[in-house]
Amino acid sequence: QKEVEQDPGPLSVPEGAIVSLNCTYSNSAFQYFMWYRQYSRKGPELLMYTYSSGNKEDGRFTAQVDKSSKYISLFIRDSQPSDSATYLCALGSGANNLFFGTGTRLTVIP
Amino acid sequence: DADVTQTPRNRITKTGKRIMLECSQTKGHDRMYWYRQDPGLGLQLIYYSFDVKDINKGEISDGYSVSRQAQAKFSLSLESAIPNQTALYFCATSGTVGPGELFFGEGSRLTVL
Image (cartoon, rainbow over all chains, first blue to last red; front, side, top):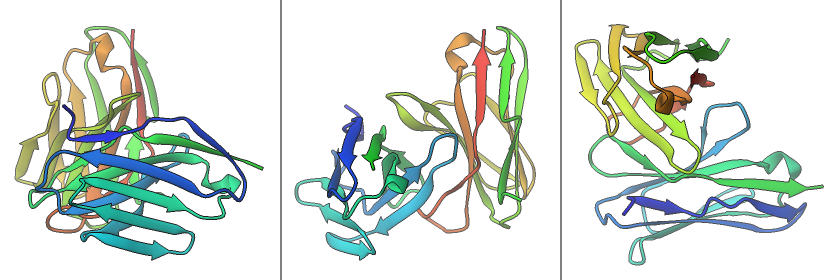
């Protein structure tokens, strides 16, 4: 069983839609929860970082963590064509390594 | 200029050849990483280094070796490349203790024929 499971998609939505991206995990030791965005032919870049259950908002993006269900989500409101990318969840514990999901490819259609 | 620079960006080679991928950074970070990205498998950690004298194996280190030549330079070598090492390779740096933000290079696409 993988440490982190993520639906690979692809996911295609119209501009303005609300997007929900999700990851599940099995290791209750994970304390750090991140979302990276990766544009085509580029390296991943950090989008959201949280280390507690609940919601964290940053503009059109909301990261949600439910430690009891071992489930994390990223919501994108008013999606834009520029949001078209692959989104990777990443989880870490007290050790130093991050475990990445496989990534969900999102396309926002104008 | 990019903060994390990888060379080469693309490389095609043959089975059995020795390949080196190089990474240099201007962020002043002590921690450097090499990841491999494959479709359907995500990013997998190959090796990581917390300072010049520290090298650690990651999840998939077999068939790879690394060298940390300086704080700013971390290279990945494939001593004898094989086709299943065809992948996209990323170097990353981090300036924090414990899991923190990783800063990635733009990747090196390696094809082994």
